[in-house]
Length: 312
Image (cartoon, rainbow, N blue to C red):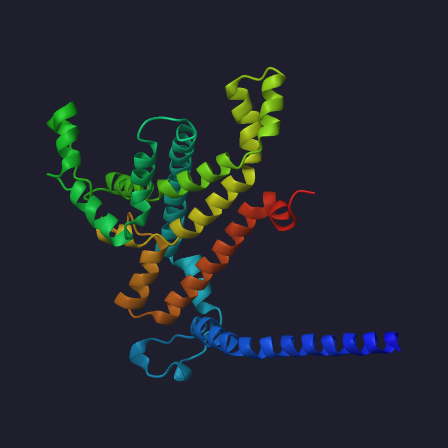
């Protein structure tokens, strides 16, 4: 009799559990529907648009001609401006990521030590990444003016011949863009790497010291391999953002002189909102999306299993 009662109670509790799960699923349906409408539907409309020749001056999107892969082939084969914008964006991204990692790692190692005013400096070094990109772009636009503070410092240190018209030639303009981006986002690398250094286990470090390793050997052979997943994740986060570089370039150079500092985001913006080639711009955006996914896939490949499964 007791067994029958326990079985009945267990069956009743299981039914209640199943009922609670069903109710929970019902409550999640509105959120899923909203996500579908807000995220998926615009993506599908833009994808369909990329296979047409539609522009706002030609009426409805559904009346546009279907051109299949013509937009994509035009971008990849004939549109040299698009190709140069991609190469330029990758070049700027690579330089920025290397500099941000170097400066961020140096600051992280410095802040592992004790010194006076550490908390104040920590807050100060994190401040740049909290400023809006548009504001950062405007600040550096003023700094790099021909009579701005940077040229004044160059003139004071090296003479009038050292000053530059930063936005009138390609090289100095790209340097200005890189300097702005590095100043703005080095704190993110600093914060991530400092968190990683603080989480390095002590036992391997102590073992290396006992075996006679000097501080440099401990850092490069014990600490840095431990930080590998953190470093790669930091690179992935920043790579996704720097590929979308727009605000600073728009405020500094508008892509000039000519198109020498035109990033892929700025080029797509001009296609869509200056030339009203929305279908062509949508195709360019999807090419960038696919390229970004491949880039992230390659960057995460060395640590994917470790991130998904953890150390066993």
